[in-house]
Amino acid sequence: MTWLITGGAGYIGSHVVRALAASGHATVVFDDLSTGKRSRVPAGVPLVVGSILDGDLLASTLREHGITGVVHLAAKKSVAESVENPELYELTNVVGTETVLAAAHACGVKYFVNSSSAAVYGESGIARVSESDVAIPASPYGATKLAAEGSVDRYRALDMATCSLRYFNVAGSDAVELRDDSVANLFPIILRNIEENERPKIFGNDYETPDGTCIRDYVHVRDIADAHLIAAEMLVKGELPAVMNIGTGTGSSVLEVVRTLLDLTGSSLEPEFVERRAGDIGELVADVSLARKVLGVNFTSDVREIAASLIN
Ligand SMILES: NC(=O)c1ccc[n+]([C@@H]2O[C@H](COP(=O)([O-])OP(=O)(O)OC[C@H]3O[C@@H](n4cnc5c(N)ncnc54)[C@H](O)[C@@H]3O)[C@@H](O)[C@H]2O)c1
Image: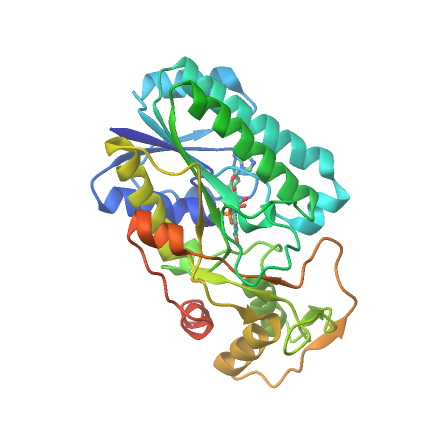
């Protein structure tokens, strides 16, 4: 089997490529390098540079490399950017996913693992959100990820074996060159603040949480990569649920993350509390019982371990 990894030059995708390769799977990366990096693609793994909006290039890549399964991660991922530019998110995350699905289906690809997100759940008011809870996204980003899941489900209803993995807040790294350096995620933002000796900003300290800052379920990228590997292998053997939460089931506050990074880097900076950001919700933690049961995983990395993986 050969797997096409869209977004494989990105932060999570590059960890997925390595996890699949380490288990003996052949992979091909398809990425437009808009936020991805050529240097993250391992030697020996073919890289096709192009957009997931280019159905012809996708189809020729699928045929040329004899692709039998797709792991689809290519997307835009910033909540804040999606509020400013919802059209870009609709185009990349919804139309892009449709284009990948249509090309895969036309080329006889049977297996499709889709990268989804906890952002599909809005402010549910539920302590641990499960896959059966109603998903009402609180941001255009979340809405595009939910719409993409719907597209995947339509192909599932045809003849594709699919699974959308709703990952919670992915952080950490297995290698310096694979680290997330985007402006969209908390850990890299705070580490950049510390490097530039700027006070880390915390958006909102008036949420209904113990320290007033947002609570999220931070999960190590290594575990996310393993979840993809297990899901891909299981899809080939049989059915998986249409959607599955991937997290640890434990929440940590933004203040806790910031304090941990300040502590581990020996920084004396103090966080600065500023206004809430549009689209952010107070608390979001995964109910992970389905993934535990179906995939047999139990991810337990805590914020300190994740933070330590980012500090030399
Ligand atoms: N990072 C997180 O905490 C998190 C949480 C939940 C879900 N996700 C999802 O995980 C996936 C990967 O996210 P990431 O954190 O690795 O982000 P990333 O930006 O590092 O990776 C996205 C990759 O997709 C590529 N890409 C973007 N638009 C493209 C296009 N039109 N055509 C081809 N390639 C394109 C980029 O170049 C990049 O390599 C995304 O689908 C994201 O929505 C991320």
